[in-house]
Image (cartoon, rainbow, N blue to C red; front, side, top):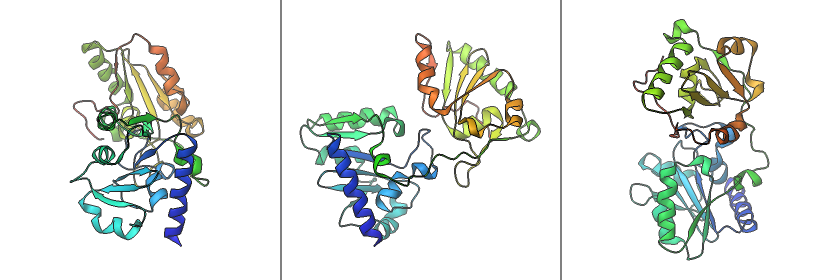
Amino acid sequence: MLMQTHEARLSALREELKRRGLSGFVVPISDEHMSEYVGEYAQRLGWLTGFGGSAGSAVVMTDKAAIFTDGRYTVQVREQVDGNHYEYVSVAQIKPHEWIKANAQAGAKIGYDAWLHTGAWVQMASDAAASVGAEMVAVEDNPIDAVWSDQPARSDAPLAVHSDADAGKSSDQKRTEMAETLRANGLDAAVIAALDSVAWVFNIRGSDVANTPVPLAFTLLHKDGTAELFVAPEKMTPQVQTHLGNQVTVRRYDELTAQLGTLSGKKLRSTPICRWPPYRRH
């Protein structure tokens, strides 16, 4: 019954891709923050295939599909994922973009969710697809979300304050030092996407990912030391609001893109995962 369920999900995804004019889609284990461990809402690979590992990806085409894992999951992937519907591929031998190059037809349009991949991966996959006359296409919204009827919502668990005594340094001090780094490098602002980095910058914690005390949030740090925290409003508490102070503006989680659009002409540090040297966990 389990395999029949996942077969039905694969069929539903293919129908959705057909409706969108796509020949395939790439499904990683990832979220908007390039996290190693993701919340339940982002467990798209597990929902689609049944795979329960923490690292892996799949490429679904109209007539074939492959699931990519490393050596840790050689046995597990075969126990959890139906080999009648997915080819088992070791990433040590073939990477997803290489598989796309070997299996995509000329004129194929392979979709991907740009929020779930690095720019380097997109360039690599686009080059591989183009070499056989195919094209990688960024989707406006994830097609798996369209067919996952009971997809969990993002966590609305409230944020918590991590005391300065436990952190070893106040958020104001951290932001001041980071702002100095920006100015020294001729930068106006930085986007901080990594969840542990957001938690570290503001001395806050969350419970949005199992076994990981991080909040689902983005940060935009400016060279004057002020910052914007992008987080679901229901996660804020009066205690956290007081802790953040008046140098931090709180915006909705989904307002990051629009806010970045107001920074035209500015120089940003914009890596998907922003680590500040020296990076120390407190």
